Length: 215
Image 1 (cartoon, one colour):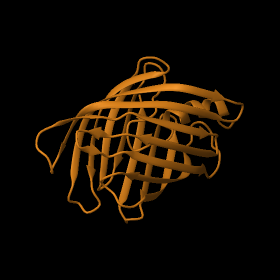
Image 2 (tube, one colour):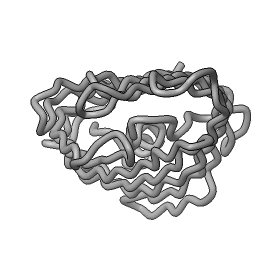
Image 3 (cartoon, rainbow, N blue to C red):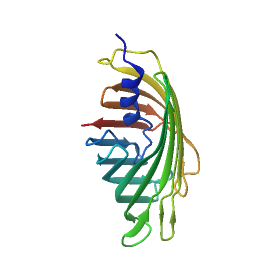
Image 4 (cartoon, rainbow, N blue to C red):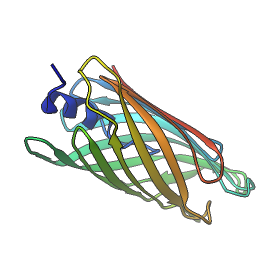
């Protein structure tokens, strides 16, 4: 018996759109850990879903400019809110509120500055197709690193619930003040119940590795 749409979507929503920064949450009373690892962008965080629509967590983010001259390190407290969800027989769509606050340090200024990072994420998915868009502001005194990304992909075939499902995901993203070009990364995603793994090489020939795990 193949995985039902409703059961698959429950897992997919928790794993959806790995945006390279704080994102979707798991089910009530679950913990979620996520990471995005690459030369210019490295992020890891964990959150706890204290309701079916709300999660709080902590995370760390390292950012580097394309020319390798400018660096940022951010430690923040995060909040995720499921604002809206639409379910149909074969699909699901979501609107997520993303927010963070913490201290940022850089190699071109002294001390630590308070950074706020509000954002929003939209996603739509079936058992075979996935699309998402994320926008987020990273603002501190004298710093503007607003971020945007779009993701789209498809699964190669449907699987049984206990099996691993392969996907092809392509992400395009950019961060103001650190990059002068779009980063485009095709990635192979493997989903199995409460986790996913992604790996790919972007258009600057840099390796990226992402993961998510719900526990």
